[in-house]
Image (cartoon, rainbow, N blue to C red; front, side, top):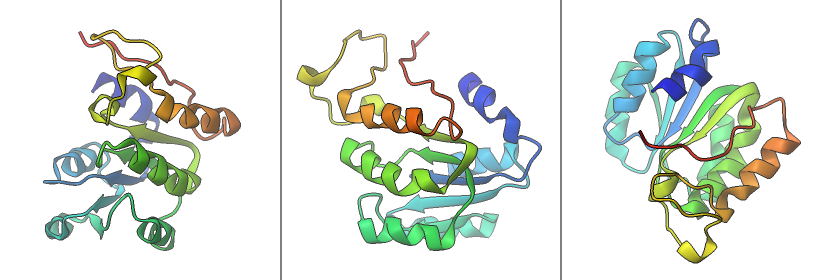
Length: 165
């Protein structure tokens, strides 16, 4: 959580627009609501039962992060996002597709987080480096670094590995 605190602190006393892919039981959404009381929080999930979480004030969108039509429709509902968290399928093709549709909706100075890259479809022949204590940036994800370098106002360029303690 220290990493989240570091990067989200600038939004703490504002009314950020937050979108998370991968709602599941709503635990993360409730956490965001406790930290950012006045936030507009949107969740994306493939399970229609997640709509039940709207009673807590969330906006739930039902669809797949791998569906071009659905992802394209999000911009009609959500814009000016301050924080986007992809904690969805953890499949690299889905991450890439979501990123290409959603990154343009992110405000300058916004934060785009991709959770659990280590859970994706690993092809160890394509690893840049391997150390069991690290989350490695794989070549399937290098498009993000290129996009960040081209849009320096949107996010801090901090792609790398995180050590488990």
